[in-house]
Length: 352
Image (cartoon, rainbow, N blue to C red):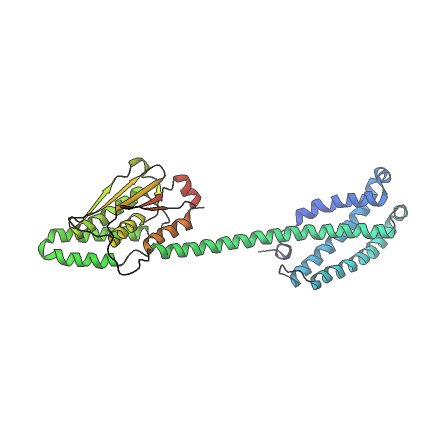
């Protein structure tokens, strides 16, 4: 349970008081009695300084608590300043009278030696009170800003995860519709192929369900999931699509976005002509830093504007998860997308 100090001061100040009160008490004693007298009568001088310092500290602390209860926000105003000044003045004269009377009664010989003038005493005490106040305020606003930043980051992370979940669910639903149409066509003519087609369709969607909650997936798992999807495409287009997988074995334990390769292949199929005389050729390779997906350009004569949702999906997911950006290169004859490879170290950073 949060203590009263932590609630209104922004931190537990026990150790600050234990260290701060004696330190300031020594300074007060030296300023009040002078170095020579203090060196000869250190304990009584220190006790007098300690009584005043502790009293001012405790009352200043209480003023700050009441101040934060009444004005919990950041905005400064005349009322806020007036509140602090009014109670600090009341505190000064109250402590001076009450503690001063007690100290004069107990240490009458020492109080007569104190050489500070009334003006100097007032100014010195004011400076010490101001130091206490701004010390507490500095720590309070630092901690409050840190908590706000933590909450902001937490909210951004939750929002990003919700957005990521939405993006990962944007796999083209037309693929299922087209696959079912293909299945209806091949069932009468090739029932064995139809059975295999259903198995691969089931495997493809099972992979989607298994990995839909994962932020990243190993390249090996992504390639394995992609095989079923490629089988479905080749069955549907019957020689109109050629897909070559040239991913090196040594990079397969690194990471990539789930479904990213499927989305890029789906994009290529959607926007390009596929025929037996002009097959769509898709190549998946890699270099040290990127998985590279390229296809020959033979654009369809589309009468509508493409939303490029699939590519935007992948870009957004990379932005949410890592500082690495994808690269897109559209030439005269080819369209190429470079997907950054996320190493094991990058993966650990992404998940913290």
